[in-house]
Length: 209
Image (cartoon, rainbow, N blue to C red; front, side):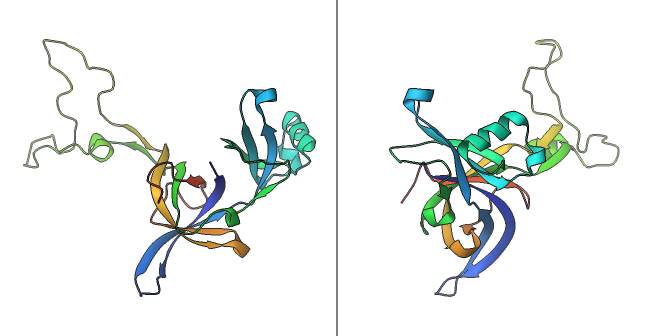
């Protein structure tokens, strides 16, 4: 499953030849460097580990420094691993946006924006209480459980709490355009995360044309 890491740059819009406007998210993807090749003989399965974005040597601990030196590559900030399906990779090999085909569908995974502690209305879409004067129940949570039985609140009950900053995947979004010289991918629609956030891009598992 071909995979690449990228940095979300923001959103813009482009126009098709027919004059239709297409909203796109601009992602600076790759280049990524192969830092380890795993085989059935050594690790029990076939996979490849790749690194994205150079890191300062003084910010890398000794075990990871030895790992990168063994591979003969510069230290990297982000490492991911993905399974290989009969494809051959070599240490130091580059994976770029040129490996992706325009018009294909993608699955994009990122960390959603954190919204801090929120109430039950914003967090779960609950209805508000009566808005009449003196109701004292405009945006508070309603009854959480019966009083007599079970006389307790069940675990997992929807209520106020931390919202956002979760791993989110959007599926079957179209790769509109690839700009190889700038390592850019223009993806139709929105993808999770804020500007500068790291996203993982791969060909769609379901619904591929």
